[in-house]
Length: 339
Image 1 (cartoon, helix red, strand yellow):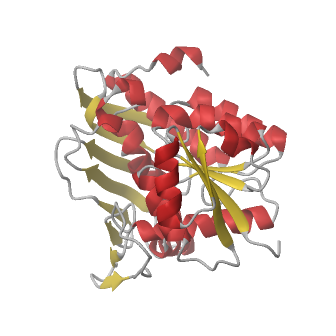
Image 2 (spheres, one colour):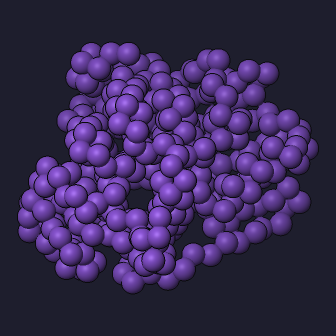
């Protein structure tokens, strides 16, 4: 593809701002954001003005029908992912969808099936896996530098209990979907994408029946354990420690790491470029890495990324379902989209 990949943005919220801002640090010859849609036209117009985007739409139908868009980034709330994903795929658009891909495994399976039937690229936006330190860690584990991976300890928590997208069941809230997707994918990354044999979890729920704190163990074949903790009630260490028979590596701010403590205790530091506008979230300029991955996959005609494959996303969804079930969190969509 000699021309740039043309992006449409579904939802004009904080994460969409960060995504577009990060894409702006990539070569304009490769990436171009051409349209944005929101439920309210005014929100879309304000977003378009700030980011210099040509077209702003009220509602997502118009975005789906725009013939000048190659791929749509979905930055909407969790419970809108499935519906928007279906809409965009049905209109021939490739899709990069914010995590969690959907609310449960049933929805995720249907979305993946639709993308495959339409011969379109679909990826869950697990941006972490495209950071240089993640890629290095994967390569080093594969080369055996850490020996046999025995344990991963990962925790992710902030005081978020008053944030609607996290506390309300109607928005697909809870830490398992919002934060757990990161801790689960980290464990799977370290253990080479193998499925755990057993998942054991416990947690604290609010009056809405949504989990505000969860502890889980993922037991892998061969005796490896992934220990994860998520919390919307307190700030946690937010590190991931990967322990192997030959040594340990720690990723700091593990979901978007710029600092790694190596086997020998030395700290390695990475940097990100400056962007046009301030970001809402930590190290969001790193969203540029997943955007470039999407472009490379689409150019090569691949329907999914090797780093966040459909198999990976379906496994993450299954583990999230298992944890929610054990903690007692049920969405109306669980029955509707039973596996």
